[in-house]
Image (tube, rainbow, N blue to C red; front, side, top):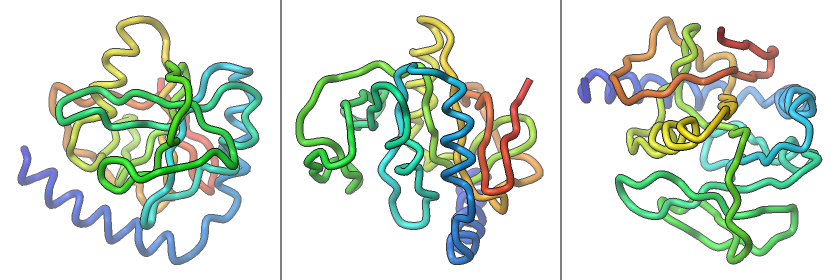
Length: 181
C-alpha cells in the first residue's frame, strides 16, 4: 500500500501545484461561509505551506476559538494551540509555523489540509498519519467535523486507503462544498 500511496502523492503534488498557480478564487470565502454555520465551535485550521490552499481568511473570520496543529512527536496525534491573527509564530516540526505560546484547545471542527480527495470523502495526506490518529481520538470522545480544504483539481477518482484512514465530513474547494453522507 505504501508504494501505491507514494505514487498517488507524487501525482497529487503536481496537480495541486498546477492548481495553486491558477489562484485560489473564492475558496476562502466559501470556507468562511460554510464554517459560519458551525457557530462558535472550537475550530482548528492550519498555516499553509508551499502550494496548500490558504485557510487563514476563514480562520480569522471564525466567531470562536481557533487553534492550529502542533506536531508533538512521530506516531502521536496532533495537539492544537490557540491562534489569532497577529499572534507571534515560530517554526515547528516540518517547518510548519505554530504559535510561540498560548492555551491548548480541543477542536470540534477541523480544517484539514490534503494532497488529494475522492467522492467517498477520503483524503490523501502527507503520510505521517497525524490527522488520521487525531480524528480517531477526537471522534472517540464525541462528534467532530473534519472539513477538507483543497482545490477542485485535487479530486481524484479514488484515494488509496487502509484501515487507519479517517473519512472527511465535507470538502470545500473554490467551486463549492461537498458533504459526504
